[in-house]
Length: 241
Image (cartoon, rainbow, N blue to C red):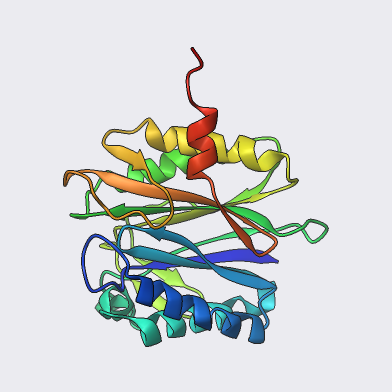
C-alpha cells in the first residue's frame, strides 16, 4: 500500500482558496473510495494550493492518481496547474505537485503531509522541502518518506509529465505507530521553519505574507482522518515562563 498526494493551484486568485472550491472538492472525494482507495481526503489547503491525498493499494495507484486529477480539473476555478500536465515530456509545463511513500502491510495507514505555497515561485522552496525530507529520513518510527526534489521534469504515475517549473511542492512521510507521528512531524516542521522566510500556517490560511516568503501547512492523515498539526505544534513550542 502507498500514500499518494497531489497538490495544485486551481484557485481563481493567487492568495487563497474559496469555500466553494474546497467544498466542491470535498463532495467529490468519495469518488476515490468508489475507485478503490482505502481512504482519501482534502488534506492540505495552503494559500491558493490544495492537496488531495489517498491511501491506495499499489496496483490501483495509477487509477487513483488519474481520478484525483479528474476531480481537480472538474472543480477548477482556473485550470492553473492542471493545464501543465502532458503525455509528452517535451510539452509538459508548470503543473501539479506529487509525492508518494510506502506503507507496510501490517500497519494502519498513517502519514504526514506537508504542502508549500509560494507567491512568486520562490526558488528556495525546493531546498526547504528537501530539508524536511532529510529531517524525517532515518528517524525511528518512520516507514518511508518521499523522494527528494531534484529540479527536474517529473513523470506522475497514471497522469503524465510536468516540467521543472512546478513550484509548490508537497511531501509525504509514512509512520510506523501513532506515538511516532508527533516526533517525525516535529522534526520535519522544525526543519522547514529553520529556513529563511518560511512560515507554518494553519490549514486554510491565505498567503498573507510579504512576497519573497514561503508558507506551508502540515497535516497528519491518519486512517482517513485529517488533523491540522499547526495548532498543537504552536502550543508545544511555547516557551514557558
